Amino acid sequence: MHIPGNGSAPLIQGDTVVSAEAGMVRGRSAADGEVRWEHDTGLGREAESVGKALLGDGIAFFTLRFGSSATVYAYDVRTGKHLWKRSLVSHDAPLVAFGMYGADAFTEGRLITRTDGGMTAFDARTGEPTPMGVPGNGLCGAVLVNNGYIYCDTEKPAKAGGTGEEITVKLDAVTLQSVDEDGSRTVLGGNGAKDAVPAYGTTYSVRFGADGRVELTPHGPPHKTRTVAPPRKEAESGRGFPSMNPVIVGNTAMFVDNRHLYTLPLDRGERARHEIDGGPGDRGPTGLYSEHLVWAPQVISLGGALFVIFHDGTVRSMKLPA
Image 1: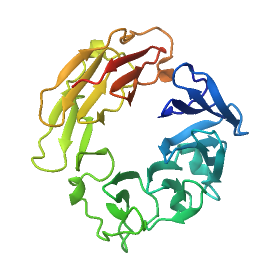
Image 2: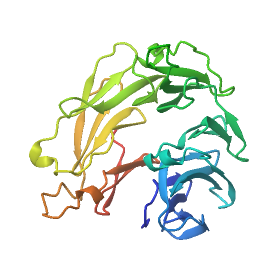
Image 3: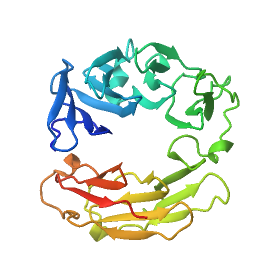
Image 4: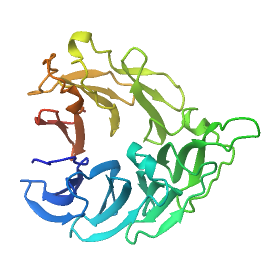
């Protein structure tokens, strides 16, 4: 399956893959890539996907940027019907170029989105907007949805003569209003929503340590940091080539480079390294300034299998390690 031109991350529901690319939104057969439906957004081939492509209640959501505009589009995955579109910008056009506005999460039938008027929740079916009760500048630097709440990293209103303090506000996912005025971060282990991943009733941080190793830290007891993948050697790093962000799939933390899959069970099992058959490996210097065009490996989990997509177009599938 080939997805051309400034493409979004693909969304998968049932046997349909939905993506936005080159100003078009398409639904394809997951079996053979045949296009089942498509819509022209009218933005042209230079339109760029920003924010997160999200799926919820059978609807695919894409934020597309073109010039000084940023717009959310919603499509029914099964029928391909275009349900609605909403502009996220009315006056703060300069920040569009920095990807400031876009979708962050989906919960309780609504799309949680950054707009130049503050955080807004759009109804999945109608696009009806509801402002969210975020203090300060009204925007979230990071968003986490977990156990019926929305956690928002934001800036506390500045006190006289001082600067705003970064806090994490907890909002009810139904009312969209704050239930923690003090912005306590204790529920997220003092880390805020950024890099926090919900799994099995708690949250984790899974990220790169100071020396380049990939680390997993639970936000509940015993708070012990464990290594998912060791630091990569200089000879293996592929100068200038990006690495994927580590993720949690099911009950396993994992990280993929261009040769191996590294796994660490959340239940304190042993970490392991799995060779990816047919992985392209890291390329040495080519003499051409092309590294900035290369993207990190992408991982999709579907039906107990992992699909790993590499920068050279190679796609490999493997069973999710037990």
